[in-house]
View 1 (cartoon, rainbow, N blue to C red):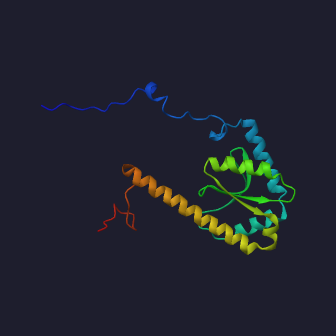
View 2 (view 1 turned 180 degrees about the vertical axis):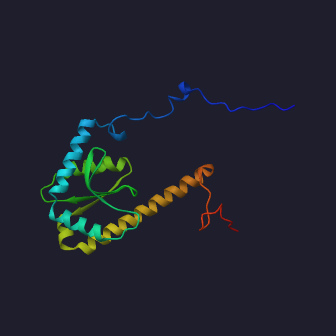
View 3 (view 1 turned 90 degrees about the vertical axis):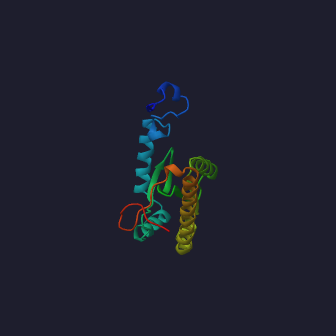
Length: 179
């Protein structure tokens, strides 16, 4: 007769120390609800009273066909408001206006990059004077970010083969038969 094996689940009290705790404030960012509401209200005001450079770039983004990627205007990301944010890419665009506090902007960019959001800084003057060069720079940044995300995904799948999903053929039927 064979011994019957049963699934043994660890006691939740034993694994509580290993797992990170879920932050209950600010959608996981440790921000109070009051501060988060103030940030959203400030972003709303910024959308209402945008600069000329911001309006011009937003208009070009609205007309562009970027596939599944889109940029949100004056988005709240953590405790910061960025001019444009592409959540699937983890990419933000910040427009540098005249008379802006550069030290504060760099500190904000550094905090965003620590959580995996790449920030691209563009001068407002460049947007108004040479839009095509700015759009080319943004496109190159998006392509680089897509490549980075793809490489991270491939590395993760190689390190964790049991977590990768089976591939399907074009019709969506079963795992593909590759020889």
